[in-house]
Length: 231
Image 1: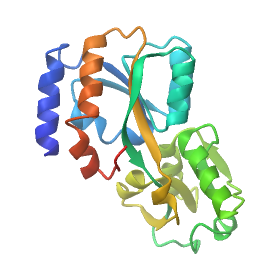
Image 2 (image 1 turned 90 degrees about the vertical axis):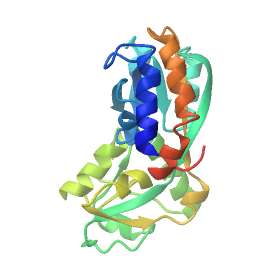
Image 3 (image 1 turned 90 degrees about the horizontal axis):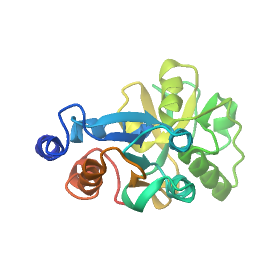
């Protein structure tokens, strides 16, 4: 199914723009391993969602914006950066990524996180805001040694041995052979939801709308196969 969807997507988008000159998609870094397979003719810029909004607000050109949470998309709407109504298309839960074999002995979403080198996303980033919410619900005060602007950087520090544990999305941890995963109680009931919209002033508005429609329609099975939950 993923291959068929990717082929279909490339054909559909090719009707709107030349190959490799499709819509420019600004998307959350946690989508970097999946979106290019769906629409190889599109162009991508992956970063932390909050940083992408800052870039758009500074005049960076883009056709589509895909955010890792509703709060960040709402900010883009409030800044007048979005054309039309955003649409939810996926969800993702947080997990604890620990170094292979868990040498620091992290026992879960508890005080053991503070006994090692914990890395997480900054509070303004969707994965950081969600981590703070989960910690508050658990009555836990987290003391990270570093706060990153995108979730892939958190994972990278655990993979490289710079950190003992990191709070990342389940899809990111599942795609790594260098980390083990510990579940966070209640995280599955409080995931972040992903939202997508056409950017106001898009250079390729028609291709952008086709992309958004595909992401919320025919690519849903592919997102589920990649580990993302429903919106």
